[in-house]
Amino acid sequence: MTRSARGAAGKGLVLIGAGSTVFTPGLLRDITSSPAFEDYTVHLVDTNGEAAETMAAIGRRLAARRGHGVRIEAHTDRRAALPGARFVITTIAVGGAGGWRADLEIPARYGIRQTVGDSVGPGGVLRALRHVPELVAIARDVADLAPRAWLVNYSNPLTANVRAITGQTGVRAIGLCHGTMHTTMALSAALSRDPDDVHAVFAGLNHLCWLLDIRSGGTDLYPRLRELVEAHAGGRDAPSSRTEGVHAAVSADLMRTFGRYPAPGDRHVAEFFPRYLSAAGSGELAWGLQGGQDMTHEYIDDKSRLWDDLRAQANGDVPLQISSGQEAERVVSIAAALLGDRDIVEPAVNLPNEGRLPDLPATAVVEVPAVVGADRITGLGIGPLPPAIAAVLAARAGQQELTVRAAVSGDRDMAVQALTLDPLVGDASTARAILDDAVVAHAPLLDRFGAVDGHDLQNQRPREGEL
Image 1 (cartoon, rainbow, N blue to C red):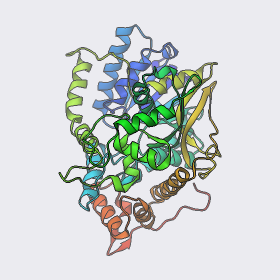
Image 2: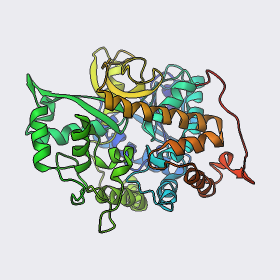
Image 3: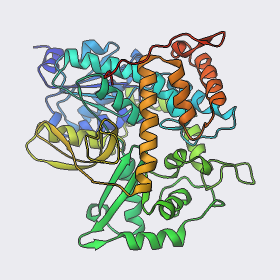
Image 4: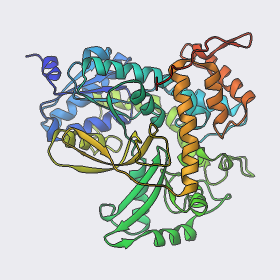
């Protein structure tokens, strides 16, 4: 039996978007540390064949270094990799680093500043318009060629992408993000507690998930957390920061306003509330957010250097980076639990609501704890949220639903409406200008949202029940 045939026999893990410079090396480090995948074939798929081959070479070096039996293959055609796969992971970036840069620069022409621009804000909408059609196409291929597979999406905007996949296909799909894990670690350090001894319950939407409860043993840690935040957090004039923790000014202000601490860090949660993204006297972002915005631009600009380093690792010119992965570690643990007979509780899984947060639509994709084991993932019911938090999340879920419908249908009017409803945009003329600039910048990816002589090229609304 060939290697590909062995992968097709139900022992295949497929990564689509294998050119991810951070995620893919972390995933490969985690897989080659897990005995659950000793007899698996990992298929690395990317439209850039050289990127897929580079990552495969790194994976083979890691496996050989650790004496691990996993087989690793590179592909440019996902349909060649998918037959019989048990797990499919998506980390695609339609438009690449240049597309992300445009998602920041275009709104900036209209005075809209974003710290990340990949989940909400106009950048998040434009990213969804590019990503949703491709991810739905991938999911349909999964349904055709690997109907037993679990699809785990990491691509942003996570909420919109998972909503589109689950609304358009019957594929078993979830979204994963490490954000709440990082928040828990930062808060545990401030509380002088071992993170393994801290039980934190988060619920909400991806990149705006609220800490509803935090305990260690029988001790409620929220009172002490409030004390630390009041003692250390700044306000509008807080110094620029790149780290998460009790000093973070936006998260502190949101806790004072809404009564709960948000995750995952100021650079993400600030984009849900436009009042934070204004300039201070220096011209830099207020509320200590300039460091977060700088991090985003540096990450985009650093892609070339990262690739140089990865190629050197693949060729054996420099030592392998063999420390544990930071981005991918939960997906490997989750996949191992799905293969086994022991349940684990995951603190944050993105899946259809179906009443888990009764204040939000049943079809909305929410981020909640879940039990994973024996080929099942069960999100846990949280119950009603504090009313003000529920109002914020419900409004955002509605706007994201409209974004998904626009992306699926290609309806220009609906795309303009989704942009207008984003609090960072707020008016239709700016929304139309942003969309028109994006159609040009992202050509041909957004051509269907263009207009001729002020008239829409397409006006095809989704049929009733289509989502």
